[in-house]
Amino acid sequence: MNVSIPIPQELETYVQVQIKSGGYNTVADYFLALLNQDRQKKEAQARLTSLLQEGLNSSSEAVTPEYWQNLRLSVLGTENQ
Image (cartoon, rainbow, N blue to C red; front, side, top):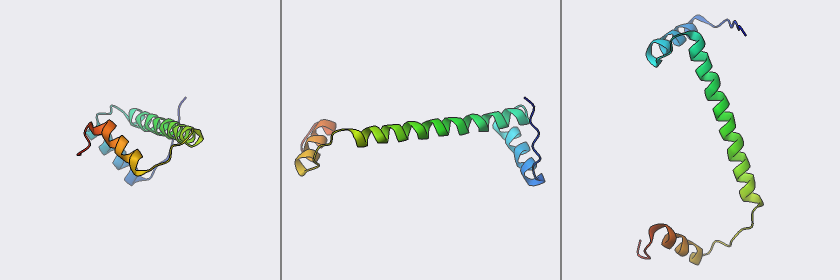
């Protein structure tokens, strides 16, 4: 697929600088990298939403001082920290 996108001169200059400094060979490589980043971001957001919903749907435990103490013990391994 060939895509042609008119962009303002200042953005064209910006893209050229990114190509020179970012290790991209062509404008197409730069835009493909941006598209991949966008896709990965959306996938990560969907995964986070799924995990948050999973957490909301799971059974919960009352958060008490004892809960925090047990959590500290399990993470830090000592009661004094």
